[in-house]
Image (cartoon, helix red, strand yellow):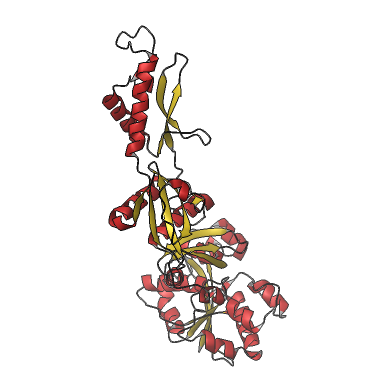
Length: 447
């Protein structure tokens, strides 16, 4: 038996919205067996835009039963039947969530008439309920009301059966089929074409825009997990409605995918990624010669085209470094902007000539560069003749890519032509340092 369902709601997600109307038509594949419809008191205000769309007002639902009062009837009509709706995951998420709150665990197979119509009635300009019904000459009475839309879905279902749709239904209801949980706008072959390997994956909307970036040890398994759990939250339900395509990039190991994911999130700024999207204010240590001939050190915001001595993400990190240099090499705090009172020749504590003082500054810079590590991490690549390489130059992440397996680098110049430059940040840098500490055999010090 098939339970053909439609609901009206106060919003787009089951966790934060309520049902205002429900219609259930029980069908045996040949004729209608049972019919149930009712308004439901959502126990909250119906938003004005919902009233404008559906015609359901606060006055209309004021005397209607609450969901809990009709939950037993709804459960009775749905249990042991195949749950059918146009964009089934939306209706199912609401009813599953509210039945569970009422003490009922709904466990049924699902069938989406959007996905079914694409298979049984191919080539139509649109598969939204209104446009689809117009294409196949089905009249919808009382559009955007639960019973009106449910009756139209019944007629559509009967039309699909008449066109030989039972073959598609049988395939879609198999346990091994993904049709019951896939987002309505995502083709099954997009999942089938995903590899079970490490990498970064991208969810696109119908316009091709990337809306989410993720990483996985097993791309196919991780992508499927996004769609197969019952999360009634607004974020997930909105996300599922938008996913229309998936692309991916295969990575050689976990560090590779971690760096690629972080870089892509900061570059693409996807709508449904929340972590790692905070703007990073980078700072840098600079040196310059003032009009009296003194070499001065200063911390400032990172300038794109101005060479720096060292970069860091936290201002405090740079200030701590600079104070250590001042103490160790006896530099003048005013000439390093740690003491920000104006420097003048009348400073009796400071009598060193520029030539002598600048030598101390140069020694401090040389020592800093000696302490900042320059190394490559080399690991197995995807192809046997290529190795994956990460380059740290003077303490900062320079880039990554693939190098010939036989290459034994001695300096950064041996690598840069083969690697792609990447933007450095503390998350990536710390990940590389941690990986190098765990895998010292993969680390090669460079000139």
